[in-house]
Image (tube, rainbow, N blue to C red; front, side, top):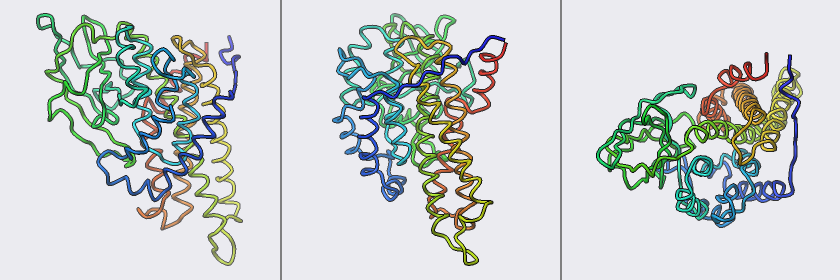
Length: 377
């Protein structure tokens, strides 16, 4: 059997350390649990002023080349930032926009990059519209591009489009001439009733069903390297959700430890009981494993099309991180007893995030199915 896991490179650069340092204090200051709860009832689910401050800090340009207004630190450098956002449940269009810009960088023409990447660095919001159903394992799409003179007409809808209500542009997967392509669609091209807001189990996030039927585009709006870009952004999406989940797992552990070391039952701190100690240690071990995997993936990923090492790393990170968070969220509910099942208990926020994150860009079972083929002869 040939080993596929020989490359276990891990590097935490000075730039990543600086980003993590800055992100820790920023996210803690801007997204305490009271703020998180207050934004649940808002239309967009995030504070526009906080987004503007993130843009001013240069975070939207971290992975964008300098020639397009970014700092060219690479997609791996966003992992430290997104982990901190996850730890404080700071929800913004950052992940969706980062993935949309990656699609343009990896699949777009020079014209696409010159027009859109500087706008992203300056705060424009993008998102991906990939799902025709709720199965991230689907490899086909029912959305079509039909010819009408020198124009192309989109037909079809997309489900669970993150931050669609605030997006300035969409990257849409569609069939064209027998191939699956990615099409760049400006939000201004959509009809007023194209967006239908959906309620997610993770109430800190926002998504819509988007009807693209009748939207006119040109052949120039198709990303020329669509196949490579589509494959890469699904893997990068898995990595970024894994980073966010790892951060949220740390927040869940903090909540668990705080409760176990303050709640007294039968004259003893409940944290003194082994039945609660051991699962808490299991949360820590699973979280640290996830953290190692997300930073390994951040190390091996690059601006080039993702190779097999990068694919393995992204899939391993997603499988481990989301299962770690799911276990932590479940234990947090159970340890809080009857109060844990109430809406007032913060533990439910973490479990909701776990349930939502688990299925984004493929669940653990999906990624392990692919890993079996990559790792085993």
